[in-house]
Length: 303
Image (cartoon, rainbow, N blue to C red):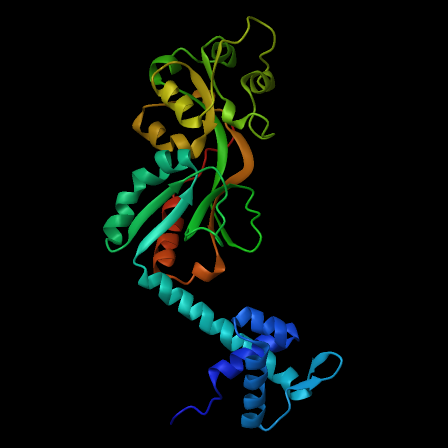
């Protein structure tokens, strides 16, 4: 049975005019003349047999139009979302993921082969950046963000908690049995966390272990997390770092967790998705895989 609907152009003109309560602003939005909006409204009123607007000093909706407009607006919203989803799917199965660089190189990339084997039809493109992408302006499907998880207007799921631990290469770690030993060892400091308020420097943290006074600490400073960890792996010193970034190195024996010390935090990694992309198949399967994979990991409890 054929649908008996008025002209979609007339309904679109009505929705815009009702939203703005102005034929002029509706015309500007739809890139037509106010006269064209008026003609569409008259045509729709004739088709429906009702008056839609009261045309006085100010344009107002009739009672019937006040009931009709929210439903028409909702229908256009649903059509817009459906078309957006189809358009994105039609652009291909490329999944664009924004992620912090260190997390991408040290945690995500080593695990991506498992995702690609499970979903060979999805092409993954990583955007490694520290800044927060703007989903409205950039072609990004989802993001992995580090912090407290407060991202208004976005769907947020916690992937894994995070903690800070001291690590060193095995050759150096064998000589570190006490906090005093650690204080006398070469130390590497990741200055990318300076001023964050949640990542301690060596002097502050060692003081909590009762190490105060004594010879000055031998500290080499790095402005990048990956460089500090590379230097630690090369045996140049011990460093404080995020557990997630070294979990694979600890399992492989490339780094050693020193003194069984763990600094807990309330921060963690979160999966962040804009609502208009949450329903895409490529987003849903990556989300499921990421939640499954990250669920296997938890930082060690504080000693």
